[in-house]
Image 1 (cartoon, rainbow, N blue to C red):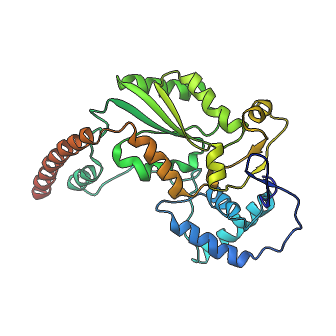
Image 2 (cartoon, rainbow, N blue to C red):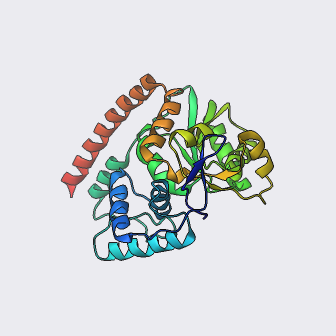
Length: 296
């Protein structure tokens, strides 16, 4: 993490960091603002996303010290019951599911049941994202459509690339990748590498971040790493070296960007036909659940 984005516009029109005098941070008001940000999401939020939203609002610096302080204070506030929960994707309770009766099992199946809602589409749409922490948002926004979400988590392994390629091949139709990642040398290269490894896409759309989006949303810009082997190419394309985190983008804006990209390929009529078939199947399951419940 680097210095905060308090600065001036460079020749590209982007806000770049400059040296400013350190200021005292009012953590009490920041934690209140952080809680408001978390509650504004219609999904769960990671600490990283919350941090970069605060950095984007320029209320805290983009430093490791600030990140650790935010982590400590939000954890304490959660223990006191004064702060909403955050996502911890790395830890969970592992236990096989169970039910109290066969009827309860059928009811659970009824809640979860759905057909392949992408059936009948001319194109297989895949939503890709660099950060695994954003999968929750994408599933919340587009899960009802049955569109697969791919979390690269940085450079992809060959195993994951092969898995994706097999999944695309099994759909027996052209596939498109709608992708969002950081705006920096690695962020641009990660999807290039993934696309080359998978080699299965009719079209790839970079939904975010682009240079134009960084300017439009005035996202915080941090100095890029000159030691990055991809730095020279990035400078040639964009005029300067920088690092902009996707997490800093307002989720409402990101959702709109993905929605516009999905709309280019999505067949609403085919989707409605699947929902009609699904509803008929669901009624049959409900009748089965009722008959089993009556036998117990």
